[in-house]
Structures are given as C-alpha cells and as structure tokens.
Length: 334
Image (cartoon, rainbow, N blue to C red):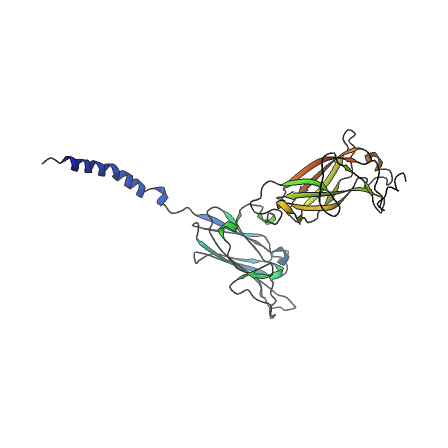
C-alpha cells in the first residue's frame, strides 16, 4: 500500500535532520577540555642559608600530584629559585604546601621553621603560582609565635591560602626577576619614563627651560634631576644620567644611581634629588664654566633587573650664573 503524502514528508524530514543530530552529538564542543599547566615558582633567597631542607607537596583534585625534596647544594645553600610544573584539566583544584626545616638557636635537631600553603586551580592557559618563603614568617621552635593553622603566612601575617585564577601571573622564563610590584604590576605595558627636576620632590620640566647650576659644599657644580616612570620595577632599578652640549659635543660626566622609587599618582613612581654633577672628574672651579649660558641635552635611562629599559631626553638651558651654597649669587666670579 503506498505511503501517504504526510508520511513520506515525515520520513524525508527525519532523514534530513538525523545527520545534523549526529553531528551535534559528535561535535568537538562535547570533548573534554585539553590539559593545561600551572608552574609553581618557589623563592626564598633570604632563607637559603638558614634552611637545610625544603619539601614541596602538591595535589590536583585531591590526588597527590608531585612531591619534591630540596636540600643544600655544594655551596651549602638551598638552590632557589625552583620550578614545579603541574598539569591537569582547567579548573581542577590545586593544593600546594611548602615546608622549610633547619636548625637554629644553637640546636642540633632539625625542626620546621617556615610553612607556606596555596590553594588555586589549573588555569586555562599556562600560568605562574609564585610562592616565597619569607624571613618574616619564620617561627622558631619552642617559641610562642603564632602558627597560621588553616591559613598561610605572607609578609609576617596569617592570610587565606586561596589564590584565584585571575591572580595567577602569566608564565615567563624570567619570572624570578619579574615579580610584580607597585611600580610594575602584573600584565604591565611598555616601560615609560619622564624626565623632571627637583631636590625634594618631582617637578615637571619643559623643553628649553632654564636651570641653574648649583655649587656644592665641596666645590662641584650640579643640577637636581628627578624622574617619573611606570612598568619598571620599584627596587634594584639603575638610573643613568648623561648629558651633551648640542653643537659642541661637550659631555658632562655620566652619573648612575640605584635607588628605590616612591609611588606617585596616575600609576607612576617617582625618584628625585639626583645630584647630577656636570664637572665630576674635572678641574673644580673651571670644568663647569663651558656649560654656563648654553643649552644642554639631558638623557635619563632606567633599566630594571629584568632588563626592561626606558629613556627620555630633554633640552634645557643652563643659566649663565651659579646658585651659591648660601642661596645667593655671591660665588659667581670666584
């Protein structure tokens, strides 16, 4: 008996949609997520001679993943920094516990001195979990110092061990010298530096501005240089000042400083009170004179411990008269 028209239409519809249904069932979206990795970066330079052993225990989704025992090297120190790579499905719970042991206060028995915990997840892409063993968290055996039961110690305080995925740093091979700080936060942009002036604070400096050489108490002659920067590390950064007189090529003696920066507004950090002596190494009383009344191109270059560099140059005009130590111009001509 021939099929009815409605039945034939239903069969054709079923045949048409069945491959689609199969395709949806077999879609890659239904596959389990690919494995990712989390790098545990362990630091502890300030404790490398105090500790005799460090143990690292890790779990992924409640199961023991990796364990490592770190002992002193041939130089008698714990070889920090260290890396431990954990792998798993994104979102899997990760637990890390680090325990440092050693002897102290004349005792020959080894005891736990410091402990650090962290709880996070396997990230969607390779990330860094930075853990530091700090001197501020050392608890001497037999003392009444508080132990962070259930929490962890950071900066000498008991805090939660939870580290959200958003707080994990992008992994980079230079992570030991690349720790975010207030001047260079995580996911920082390109380094910037702005040349300024000032002895007691940062002041803006415009191109062509007139600055006065000051005579110091030992007879040298200097300008007060300041700067603002961002996306460069706060500590350990080298600041180099150079200057050349346009037209003549006369150069001032370069000066380098390694000073910490202060936080400033707008995400910048500042440094001021840099004494830039133009006649250092020259004949005092004479070497500064060719700079008076002339233009000078001053360049500031900052380089942090990770090798990030920024520089800026401004042309200033050096006044034809000195500012004397007593705040007057009485020393001119002497």
